[in-house]
Length: 228
Image 1 (spheres, one colour):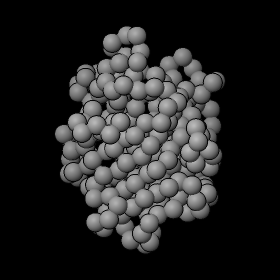
Image 2 (cartoon, one colour):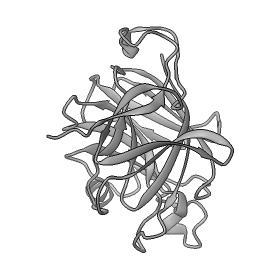
Image 3 (cartoon, one colour):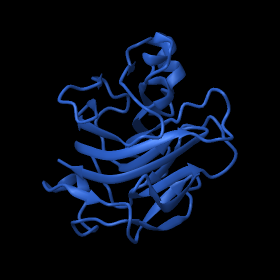
Image 4 (cartoon, helix red, strand yellow):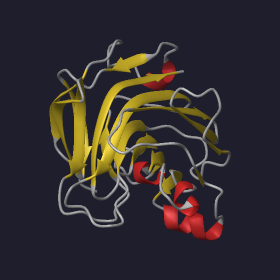
């Protein structure tokens, strides 16, 4: 599987990158505004200033598709269990179709060839939708490639998604805590998780951390940290 080009002007880490993230006790801060290389996969990434913050803008590299493996991979981020935090903001692109939701989130345990990974993401336009059913689909877990969102919704409706208050295009603090086969999503600094996944489909494992987007999305990321 082809992995996209390295991109510059992206990240700075507080611990030497030769130390795998998954085996240190410290938190590694990834500012997304300096010069360490990241790897793009089916996306374009650029350093920008967004709403007063230096950030990484991520958009699809080609025409919008329904592929669920569009992400920026944090090089050297061998991650098994721990905590991933990031500020993100996303909204549908101006040219996006009517079903675009500004899909944006965090991927973890990403395989080296991007063939498998787990992800939890937001649908910002659903957070304050006038229909309750759309609000119930504000956050989502997927496991690529065997468990896309539509399979999970069909086979276990409501089990892997939930509501959280979201505003498209506004900065949103997100934290994902992963332990073994469990992952919890926290939004807006809340002490209570918005979503609990107790049976990660890939089981225990390790891999890279990624910044994930879905079709028709323009996303911005800042203040990424990865820790135990």
